[in-house]
Length: 451
Image (cartoon, rainbow, N blue to C red; front, side, top):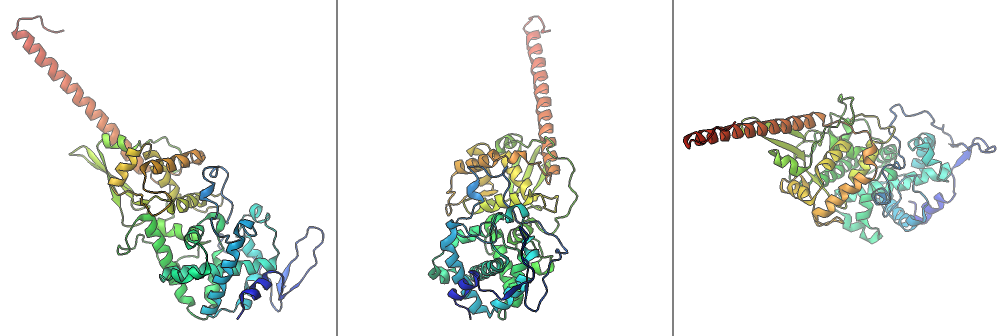
């Protein structure tokens, strides 16, 4: 079994592969496994590419939500001095994974190397070409990152993260870095590793499902004893995702992701802040069952002239904010293959509701927002307002707004208009009644009638 030093040596240049063509000028060298053929055909099911977050989303205030804190995973942040210490931690995680799961790392390297062209195509070309790494080392990088990633997920799902403290890595930061758009690893690499693992490969898929399910619960603020927060089928029954971030989105949004959306964007349907809705007789209710798509609705109560707006429950703190913002970055990336930008729509929706701390207070009272003290964004309504104002200041408004909730907005607007008309009618009726009373009173006193 390879030691840490063996793996480092492999990354630094020991090669099992032979060159099939010498590079000429700027021509790229093509390598193929000994006794095998290079796989260059594109994926039959093209997926969104891993890329840098767009400039319109990241500014000086938002950079912290998209940059890795502890560890570089995948190609885009490879080789940065900032993450040099974490590279040693990844080697230790990888070595532990190899030992415990009976993995043939050299056989896997051969397999990954054979499809390296296709794996590089999982990244946006303009971003990937900035990284200087040859195919031999790139294949090892994919494997080391994949081993470390799967090892962390397995230990987290089994409740054994304390056993990894000896490695010295900041596991909380590592967990957050797993769901950054720029820090993704092609899921095909993870799939190849799980398929080839001699011990427990099939169970790893269940552990990934459990890990993603717990992450959804953390975002939705649901207890462990609650039913599954999404109706999404297990990943084995679905097409493989592009990466872990897409898998998380699939579980948050639910199965019914390909629905016809309204072609209009930026319709001008204004919902109004929470306290304005409250003045219009609209009550807030938290939706905890089903996916983010299923949990937003408006129900008018015609007899009482009030309405109930049901909104998905979300935890807003220093852990969930980066996940939500990177999901927006993923949904708004140029090759996102779905016009149903559910998470982006919901953050837009919340952004329109929140302007003052009192708005956050009402959302908390209704258990729509949960802001706990366990993370960097500590329990302050003012800080939640600041977060949503930061979102608004990051050119989020320049994104064509998807109308996943257009029908709900229209229902709220109709209710508010009806409420206003009802109030005006009552005011006019009251004014007329008062005028009649005054006229009658004046007549009794013998005063001139009011005109």
